[in-house]
Image (cartoon, rainbow, N blue to C red; front, top):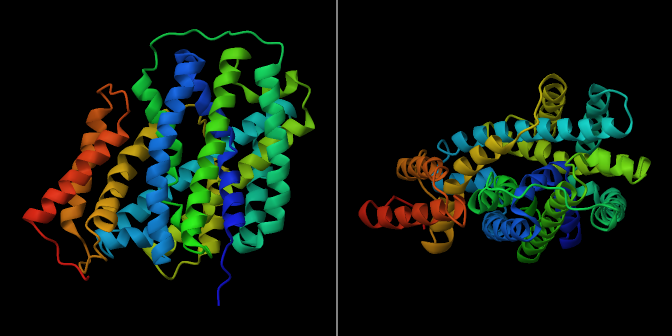
Length: 391
């Protein structure tokens, strides 16, 4: 019988996902709004993203299926392959971005070369993969305790150091666009969360704690980035750590936060690969993704990820909207079709609507309006063209 994961271990996993250099860097983008408006956008974005993340996690937890296996329920056995492939590409991208950000920041503290730090971080991710999800409990407890202490030190340096407001308040980033950047991080975990909640001993509690812990930590990381850009006058976290004399402690924050977050990306890429072909082994696919991500991080610059974040939103927001409509509102057990054409068409419409909304400034961003329209399209289509389903 396969070992189940506890609520505690799920919380630790998602604490590690939230402690991320990429989240701090994204937080720096909010500085032109000022601290109060920037935090309002961050909180609203995470509330929207967190609700969606909980819905996605609960489907997997109840059905004991991985994220991409739950997608088959709405899009069909073959129809879900599109999202599995897009998810794998997203996760390869995230793996590369995280290793790139981590190596760049680590090199700012100890100048050994970006490629050296990329290899170190990539090697540690491989160690995490070999240890395996259910065996990471004690290691994660130690790592997360250290990261919490060091993150609090970083918070103290940013907000209680000898700094003064140094950011220019302007309209370069609208409030709605900022909300969308707040949604983007929890949204990027939608195609992953069920890979972990499916193995939970207590599905509801584990999903709730996972989402709550991740979003609280993510907001904290965004806030550090926002505060760094406003009060320390720089978004370069390595510089802040060096100024504060954190040195080795700062290096530990950077390296282990990158490892604990990127491990989830690589692991889930392995799980999604199995949805494409059952012949693929989860662990070895994850190892391949970690290796490819390390190589990409060494070869290519990845300094601005905003377009990448918006692309993730446009793909996965309408996807989860259709799943929410099917599972929670219409309470349908799963399609009997190999390809659920109706839902794929609705997803395409939702994708187009999201891209259109990127040019429209709404106070709640793009994701929430797009999902509402997509859910309404699902309900209308079900009345006009009922799909053949197995109840």
